Length: 431
Image (cartoon, rainbow, N blue to C red; front, side, top):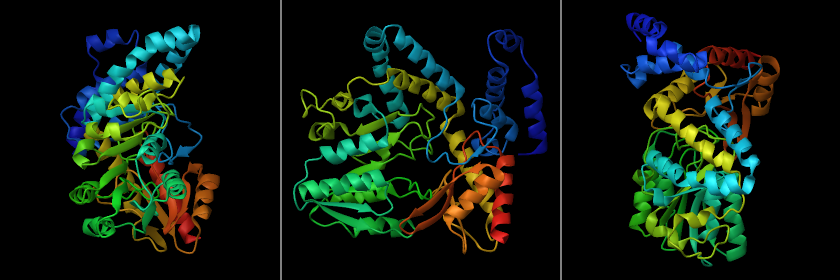
């Protein structure tokens, strides 16, 4: 960003209008400054804004993260911003005033507007969105709800998430279906290679292909649309694990050409822990049995997948505040910032002796999640070193052919924290 523009940004940020001043009576300082920063950033491109630390400082103040640890494992679960935390606590207190009344007669009435808002972000019909607790629940709803017979084939990879792998193995054990395993060589920027791995595994017996949109172990993005298009030409259905992709980088679910999609909203949407969503293409809903039984299992109403019994309404309704926070930042701004942060630390250690990067720096093939390995060292050794010596929290990955430490910054991460990470990795690699 040009120096003159940066000075202009800071100058505008410091000038409070009369309206802003009057608003200060009820708004905390961090919130007032955030609103001013958002207003003054309107003329900047998302790419320019991605590197503007003065702007992202105010986004960071929206979170209540600990100053005693640098959390770079947002790939596991992300903290929610303060506005989401406050909403969840407020709704919880509200429920406890008279649970059966306030939960079912008041808060439950907010589900349909919430469904519409999630669908708007997903780019689909509200009649294709079910609200649940996480991506595992959504995906297993489909995995166990599909009408598969002995000998039917499902194509999936060894790099998929363990919960999904175990669910498919259970169906194999119980129903005699055949699992066709792929073993992907990652990272790669060869989209044709990735697509062909799936396409070449399709046979006349293939009924469904399971695709992980972004591999959680190293952040590899898969070409879902190309694989899905090839699958549909052969009459094969497509299930997408979008645990790490939804609200992380920009896309509309229908554009993926999948039949089923699930995500955890407590990852990249920053919703309360224990919130998720399931997308099923409208004409496919009637074919899937719900995981939790209801009166009409063959209904074409997406709501049949929400028969969970009594559940935490206070968590569900606070998702709305997470959607507001996401919209406030903007999908494009958020994606550009996340990709910038990942590349910021990876580019500084790229080419350092003994260091190997296990994630692409190209935005087409990776976004916030990165993975690094040090020659001659176990991932656990680097993970422990970062935490014990520098209070940097990451996670060691040893899964199939992916070995390294997964490092995942988020919108509240500062470049100063990433500079500390880079220095620590260099010290470790040189030891």
